[in-house]
Image 1 (tube, rainbow, N blue to C red):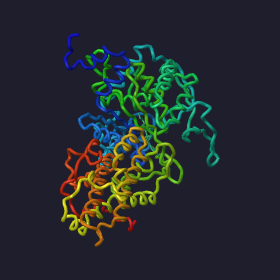
Image 2 (image 1 turned 45 degrees about the horizontal axis):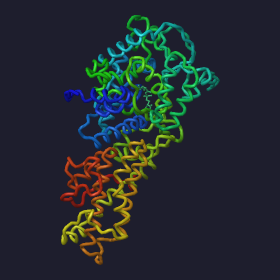
Image 3 (image 1 turned 180 degrees about the vertical axis):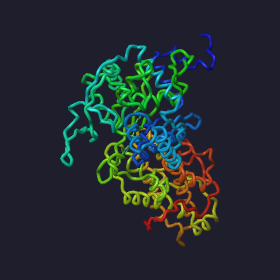
Length: 556
Ligand code: ME8
């Protein structure tokens, strides 16, 4: 067979395997890593819940760079600026909606900076390029006969920007005034009846069902996967995708009918496409879908569980309609609560991320979010006491270990012998448990992160740090009785612990991990996942007396 030029490697694999296999196994491996967060409504300042989604996505983005530094990462976040909710919020402030969004969107952008979130694109849905992409998508759906004019009557929540079926609506009463609320979100709903455009969502039920049945990994935690599959056993109703201009002026007009405005969720979901260059040009390579070079489809989409249906049902239906592959994995995290009630802008019980960052520093806040919020399954309560407790945990496990291992007493003692490599530390019962832990840490950590078990991955690191602290206490290398050689063995294992943990903590606590690795004199080129294998590298000229954390918890 005539050999194909290099740029045809995908094509070669297509010839050898079925098109579907070739697509999933080969092209996806070569495309940029693509991760997204929701785009947030800038109707108020961001709270800890928003920071949580940003940090979780950032952990995976940074982890991808750790695993494969040469693979580009596209990491998209931003603000969702159209719709009734924003229109009303701006009106309440007597402001023009765009000026209102300009101001509040900036708070979200600032938060990404302040929180060390390594996003590569911050999109605002009021940007020209995004609006053009939404118009293009509408036309594409329309040209396929998937949009028609109909009428819609139902319970609409402005706060959630969605209709709820009558089965999810209940009566409520406050101060003698009766109204209706969604039983799912608790938000107020009102009856709306109007002529609008509809998307033939019902046509996609079987496709979605067979996709999710074949891909149990597509939605995490698994309970959400089960729920979506169960919901797809029932017929899907077509989706109302426009609002009368008279009701909603703040949005993108329907291309062929300026009396209608495109529904904010169609607009918002298109961000994931527009932010990486949709409408995509043809890929130019047979059996490689367009968009692949730009990163499509997302490897991971991080969302809160409140917006699962939009991402697990509506968005994939839109994608299938325009011939694009589905996102690979949806991570729908649980909510942060305050006194067990969901933290939300409308309720007003929100924790301020900027205040927490200013008091504790971003790395401790990120550590708490990952350590406690990184199980994703159950809601977790945010409190200052818990933030302090977990800060104390990592300061004592990591910060103190570095101080202890580099104390001047130990440094002086070990200077008398050649520093042993960690692999050369004898396998006697004092050292064996830590050596065994270090031998498997990187692999275990990797498997846990790949499985979205972020809190467990962090816990593995903490356990190894605890083992190293225990070794220090048991061996007491600073004591007179400890020989220089024994002190050097202990120090070598502790340095190896700090080196590995420093590498693995980079996605969680990027600032402190960098400081730690700098103090161990680990070159910037030796900080990848591969470098975290046991004794793969040595530490260099270790600095003495570096204080990793400068927060004084006793004063809080
Ligand atoms: O829904 N705990 O925007 P939004 C954890 N614009 N995460 C929380 C949270 C909490 N208490 N509260 C909010 C929207 N979040 C749409 C999204 S995407 C195309 C459009 C996080 O400002 C969580 O990720 O209401 C949730 O899904 C998102 O913020 C909702 O943000």
